[in-house]
Image (cartoon, rainbow, N blue to C red; front, side, top):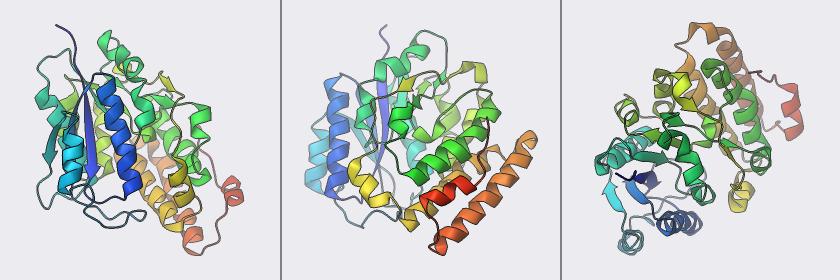
Length: 292
């Protein structure tokens, strides 16, 4: 039986037209390459870079996306957290699959530049070498991001994850491929923040995690760069992400208590300088880096 590749996608009810167009490009690329997708729509979560609107959930836009032939599900009223939407998307894709040979791929829906590398991403699972694939951005790809995001992800959060798993990783890229066998570990994990996307990784044997795939074709969107670079609210949001994506999932590991405590102190100092409006890219070199 041929393996099916099913994308698990989570999108929001509030977005501007530029964001919507990026997501449509992702849907177009998934359709062009012949893959399936399970799409969950969530009600708007407060995010500093988005204006509140009902753009995506308008009748015309839903009809536009449904023309791709993807299965869609609107998250129930009151389920506001990003964690529950991610879990719902993975579960939805799992329910659509019918074989243990199928592979589920989660990406953020504006990452259309990743889709062309789908076969490369899922190959370690299809060949039986891995149950979970966490691809990494190339140096060139990472260089397209705002400096502050490069710093929080590459210099603060990721090195401690590397220590935890004993290998180079890039969990902040938020591109994961799951075998059908392990998908329930992720969608059954309790919680409703970004933490639930990361904590279950600790339940997987590191030998069954492949992080060797390098993605070079993804660029951080220019329009997002212009909006986010130097934006204090976004910088505070990135600090929150480090807590939810590194500190919260890894605090159960006593062997990492010292670097995690040091990381929390670094985040507090960053937040203080951001709120005072005194943080520049040059200041980042003064903050401690974390070695894998």
